[in-house]
Image (cartoon, rainbow, N blue to C red; front, top):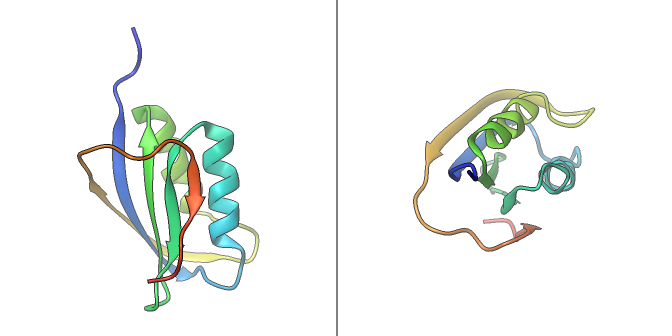
Length: 95
């Protein structure tokens, strides 16, 4: 029986821009087989949407709490989302 899907919108705060966070997120999400996207925000945060099995999404959220080597994550806030997410994982433009 296939796992049900979990979709979360994530806001990651701290020193998360200028440290390769978006491309690290894309690489990790693809490695885990997640769908979704990631982008910088003008307020200094990184925003992402992850879609996949609840266990895999939870693993990605744990990874986001650490981030890439030079990141210093202070907060990872999540909101459950509904609806579909396009297949694949992309880096979007800053908003």
